[in-house]
Image 1 (cartoon, rainbow, N blue to C red):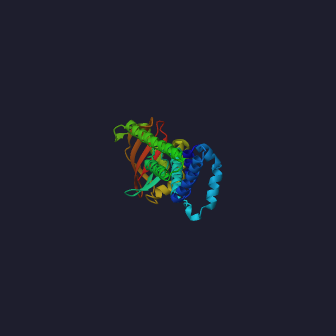
Image 2 (image 1 turned 60 degrees about the vertical axis):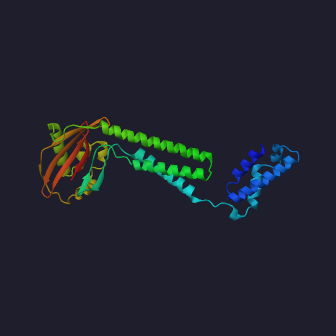
Image 3 (image 1 turned 180 degrees about the horizontal axis):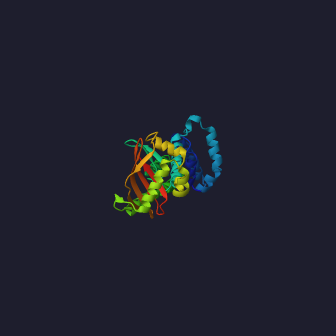
Length: 293
């Protein structure tokens, strides 16, 4: 190798040294090589005379005072760890995120228990945060002169995340555009009305076994039990009392992700509370969601 290549490799090998110390050794070997060239050697011969690069670096590092070595700055490590954790979170969300919300509870205008069918709203903010962290990591690596391999990996990951965000947003937009709801407040068909009445009666009598075995889709079954349902009911009232009456049943149809859902609205009166039900059936009239308040 010639002098330029030798000094470039030496500078890279001494990246742990503070800039002033690194520059001093580069200048030192530059002068040695130039003296040998002036003495009749070629640059290649002069560089070869210095010995193996690893031996040169080991000799230099053994002589350098500790304060001349740059302390490891935690920013790079922290950024990489955060990027890794957020990236894993994105993968978990992508794999574990179901197409149907199976159970959730929330507080809105009052206590509400929710079973609802439909596409889960994806945490796009998580994907965007991942992209921001990756950008910050790449910038930090570039500024600190880190290896090209690490920078390349970061850029590839960033492109993947951005592509993923764009595709998922586009998919969600298409799903919304493809979703159609036929006129609301339409009286339900006799079959839908019968199925709705049966579900409400079974729910009122806490007969979750029958709901699981004969009415619910697979995603709903694990939540139709005393533990979950008691907790959901108690959020409204600890004692509903006996079922007194079921009002008029209204329905609407909604197509989402190529699946046709029938969404039913009906009020039911109990001894101690009045409940507004929104019940969702799939295209086979299997129970896919229950919302009550």
